Length: 312
Image: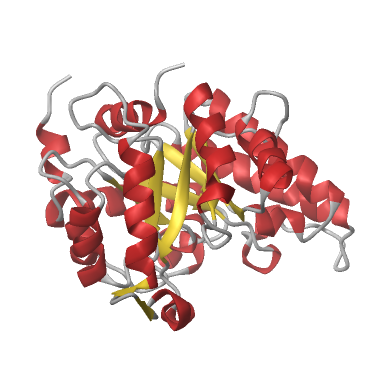
C-alpha cells in the first residue's frame, strides 16, 4: 500500500482542502429525526441512532473532504453495541473513499502496545483504520510498535504533542533540561517522521503530531520543529480556533496540516447561522453547508488556498 504520508497528501490535493470532519455522536445533540422513540433508550437503540447519524454525516462529507476522525469514546461509552457500531462506521467511511483517523489516544508498553497497534492499524480487525492517535508519555519504546506496524502496512499515527485543551499546559509546558516537555516530544516525533518519510517531494512521514489550533504561536513553532510530520490540528470551530489561528501549521504548498472540526459541523443544524436555514429536518444540508464554509475559510485565510488553484 502507498505510504500514509503520501496518501494523505494525495487525498488533500484531490479534495483541494485540508478540512477534517470529526465524528463525535452525542445522544442529546442528535437531530430530532434520529432520536430514539423510547425516552429511555437501550444501548442498542442509541447505537443504531449513532450508526444512522454517522453514516449520514459520511454520506455528505465524503465528496468534500479527505478524511474523517471517529472519536472512539463516544461509541465505547455505550458498551458492546457501541463498539460494534464504531467498527461499522470505520469501515463504511473507508468504503466511501475517506481516510479514517481513529481518535483513540491509545498506548501502553511492550506486547500491549503491539496489541493496540494490531487492533487499530493492522489488517485483522474491523477497528482498523488508516491512522490512530497515540499518547507518547510511556516513552519512545511504547511508540515503536505503532510506528513499525504503521510503516509496514502504509498506515500512520498522530502523537499527542501540544493538545488544544486549556489544562494541557500543566504537564506539556513543564520545563525539563531547558525546554518544555512538548518540545521534547516534538523532537522525538520529528525523528520518527523523518525516519518513515514517503516518496513524494514533501517528505512527510508516517508519524505525525497533534497540535491544537488554540495555541497558534506554538503551532507555527512546531511546524518548523517537525518539517517531516503531518500536523493534526483540533480546536477549530467549537473550541474557539479560527482559520487564521491554524495558518502557521501549513507549508507553502498548502500541505502539512489537516484541520479538524467536529461539533461545529456535525451538529450545525442546532447552531447559528444554520439553525434557521435548515433545522432538524434538513440536518444533512446543514452539515454540508458548514463543511463548505470551513473549506472556504481555510482557503481564504491559510496557505491551503493554493490547493484551490491547483489543476487536476
